[in-house]
Amino acid sequence: MGFYILSMIDLKVLREDPERVRTAIANKGSDCDLDAVLEADRVRRAGLREVEDLRSRQKAANTEMAALPKGSPEFKEKVGEMKRLAAEVKEKEAELRKVEASWQELVLTVPNVAHDSVPVAPDPSGNQVHSIWGEDRKECPYARPHYEIPWLEENVDFRRGGKVTGAGFPFYRGDGARMVRALVRFFLSEAEKNGYEEMYPPLVVNAASATATGQLPDKEGQMYQTVEDSLYTIPTAEVPVTNFFRDEILAEASLPVKVCAYTPCFRREAGSYGRDVRGLNRLHQFDKVELVKWVHPSASYGELERLREEAEALVRKLELPYRVLLMCTGDLGFTQAKKYDIEVWAAGQQRWLEVSSCSNFEAFQARRAGTRFRDADGNVQPVHTLNGSALAVPRIMAALLENNLQADGTVRIPEVLLPWFGKETMGRAAR
RNA sequence: GGAGAGGUGACAGAGUGGCCGAUUGUGCAGCAUUGGAAAUGCUGUGUACUGGAAACGGUACCGAGGGUUCGAAUCCCUCCCUCUCCGCCA
Image 1: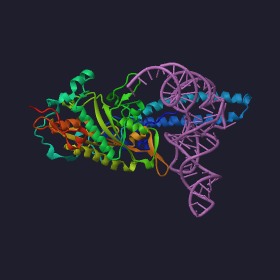
Image 2 (image 1 turned 120 degrees about the horizontal axis):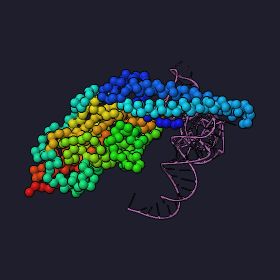
Image 3 (image 1 turned 180 degrees about the vertical axis):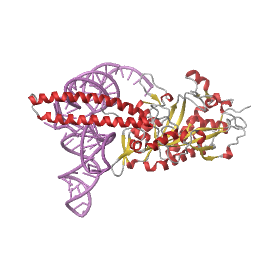
Image 4 (image 1 turned 45 degrees about the vertical axis):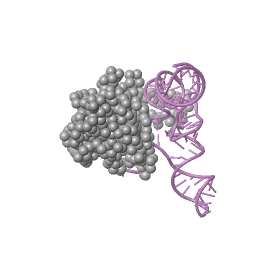
């Protein structure tokens, strides 16, 4: 009955220091019932012992029987005896299977424990501003919300996108499409310079993959599902890419493994409203370059800072004002131990737009995904995984459109994009 | 989509009902041999859960899931995947 243990948390920590986990659950505002988890763990282990003990007896008897002549009276007597034992094993096994199923379900609800450096607070108001860049650039005399730019619909066609697919699925055309391509190529080439291997992954994944990265079982509603094959469209490249090494043991010397991937991302995002979803602010399909790293546990927090810096560098090169937030426990996701968000200033809307999220998952995803490495002592242990957007395309485009509007109504293209975009302005000049 | 073949440890490849967690070879690690190396010899070399302070045990895993049986890598069923041929197709 080979089943797969999926736990996010180190079960040993859970047993030996439940109070630490309890505090972490409370800090994250999770409704996980730790006592139920602990009880299930206890019941499971008791049942396991029972079954294993019976099996052990069964095995010993089988070895004896193998030595006896097939038709002999002793053999026949043994068979009768073993029939009862076999029935008992079967019964207890069925029981155990149920116990394990509910235990598995419960254990999957325990969130990752936040790192000590994460501020403890119940909601987003507790997020800390880690740094701000480009304060002096926030004044943009000709700025206006990008969705009010007169020529925008010529480059990002929301109406036809709505007709063909639905709200939140625009057509990019002409310079809009060119801008998407320019940004993607810029992001990828910078990632490559930073030592990331480029990957182009599948855009739909199976349930096992979605579970490993934490989309399932809880956030099922975030993903589009195929009707016939129970596959899920990816909400981010993180999902297929992190699963690349699922059920594999990596060589310690190969760490860190760094991968970048450009993909479209699909999000159903139930419960969005108002200005949040206007224009390019929030789409059901958008493009993003994602960075993913598998690292040695001792290196993961250093790698998180590096990841954040790499993402920041992109925004700086695009000359967009931004701030970095250190997310508090209450605003941290289920899977994350520590997370930075990078937000660009959109001068037209006069608001910050999240364009990157850089997270350390520690061993959480790796444990679920079965991605491990063998350390110097020959012990197998989970790697740490990290990922970060670098960057999400539409919101960067929104900020560029708003902040770089010029007196004539066109948008100035930042210098770093010129090799990719091929011209210095975008849009139609007002007459 | 049709026909056939097959999925066993890092790889190759035995095994067709009990003595098989699994012969053997290669690879890898250590030791011996050597001035050093090659070659050779010896030893070791899976994962997960579980018991234990540890030493050291127990159980499971031969693509996945069910079934038959006292007992399954071996027999039966379902599914998945790979390969070959045909068809179709960007």
